[in-house]
Amino acid sequence: MRGAHYDRLETRPPETRERALFHELRAMLGAVRGKTPLLRRALAGFDIAGLVDRPALARLPLLRKQELADLQRAAPPFGGASPVRAGQFRHLLVSPGPVFEPEAHGRDWWGAARALYAAGLRKGDVLHNCFSYHLTPGGHIMESGAHAIGCAVIPGGVGDTGAQVEAIHHLRPGAYCGTPDFLKVLLDKAAELDLDASSITRALVSGAALPGGLRAELEGRGVVTRQAYATAEAGVIAYETSDARGALVAGMVVNEGLIVEIVRPGTGDPVAAGEAGEVVVTRLDSSYPLLRFATGDLSAFLPGASPCGRTNARLRGWMGRADQTTKIKGMFVHPSQIAAIGRRHPQLGRLRLVVTREKEQDAMCLRAECAAPAEGLAARVAETLRDVTKLRGAVDLVAAGSLPDDGKVIADERPVG
Image 1 (cartoon, rainbow, N blue to C red):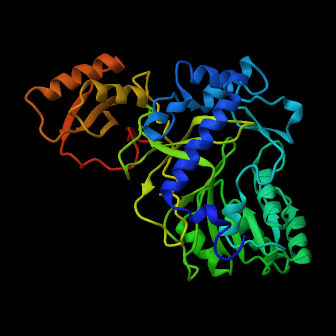
Image 2: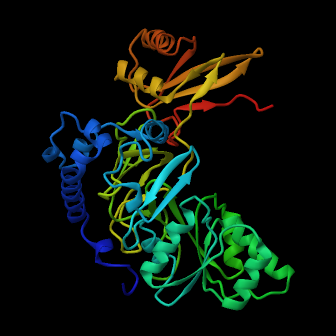
Image 3: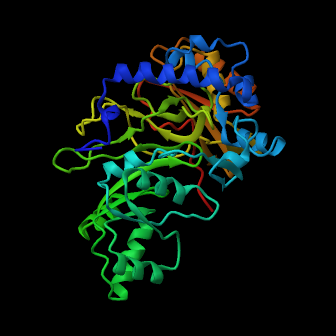
């Protein structure tokens, strides 16, 4: 670890990284497939040797959080997703669902060190960690990354702001990690109690939105603030970086050791380059191998190389939730059903089901991009819409490229309240 980058892996040629990732994927699956019931089912009839690129990977099924929770209830503790016995892990953790996650032994098991390093932490720094340590992985994710860099950690957790600012005043940490709004709470509390929190000049935040106004306020109070995108299942997926002048770089660099895909919501099919969709992560860890884990989050890949010098792909950032299941006239409509309509009519492009209220009743209109609509196409699509959803709705054929690229497949525009 030296200079602007954590190690040489961050700056290797993209094609070298891609070959290495798929080589590691094949080796990992070959080693644990026979010991992991979930992988055996996912890979049934599939030749691991053929996993050489992303199109091959896209042929495998997705694993969703709800499916993982169901599997864990049926086969505790981890639903057949791990070849390791529970007692061999370092921590056994819980996230909402509930979903139970292990933490294995090993340096920076969650992949947080790169994000912390990009946020400015260096060996010998002190980090005030305000992610929860109680059952959930957050505090452990960041602490393991800080220790990998060589930092001391104050395990602040959440709450008890008075005691926390006392610790900050006395121990003088140079950095903070936690949610962005809790950092503001601590700075405000320190000012209220006339305690010095000015030692905190860097922050890595996650777990909540960072509006531009809040970032500006934190940086105006002397705290350079960067974000990480992480989940309890996959660890740190991507993180913000700075250029050579210290300015924020657009997007978030994908972490090393992961294969990240963007797929059309409701399907496992990769979207076109730059198009918004659901983030899917394959984690290359033999103790808890996640194959095509669908996060439920929306994002998109940014084009071009990052000015920070890291060569991995960049995500646009968190753009909302992919699970847009909506109840219409008492029936649930799922993004996968809208995707099924698209498969029946391949001449259509992007689709968007818009739900509104008309004359005190639910109404829906499928807006569908089509470059050259044939006569009667709208009527045929309307029949398919009724056949798939069991609900009647209008169809509006629009020009190609006219629908927003925000990953939304179902837009619920009914008034609230």
